[in-house]
Image 1 (cartoon, rainbow, N blue to C red):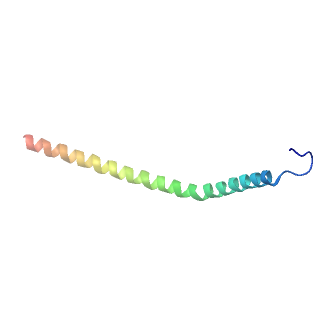
Image 2 (cartoon, rainbow, N blue to C red):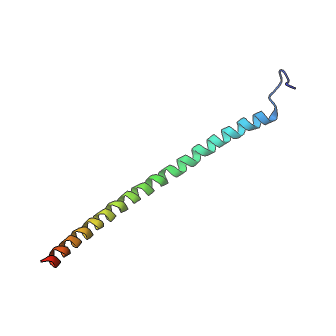
Image 3 (tube, rainbow, N blue to C red):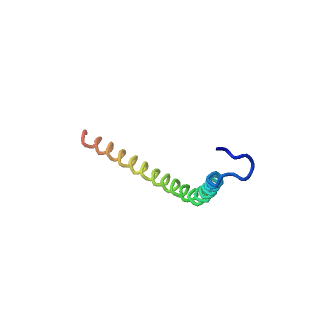
Length: 71
């Protein structure tokens, strides 16, 4: 039966407490991981530029060698 007045049943208080604790933990974890993720993205972007430059050079060399074989 439902009681009128008094305090909340303990499971509701615990549920709200765990919700707030989870939100606090999630915020801390996000703040901890965000700079690491940004650094990883920055490094990945730099590596991607290097890879693209190497592929461009390899393609140019391949085209140059094809020209000499045909002549």
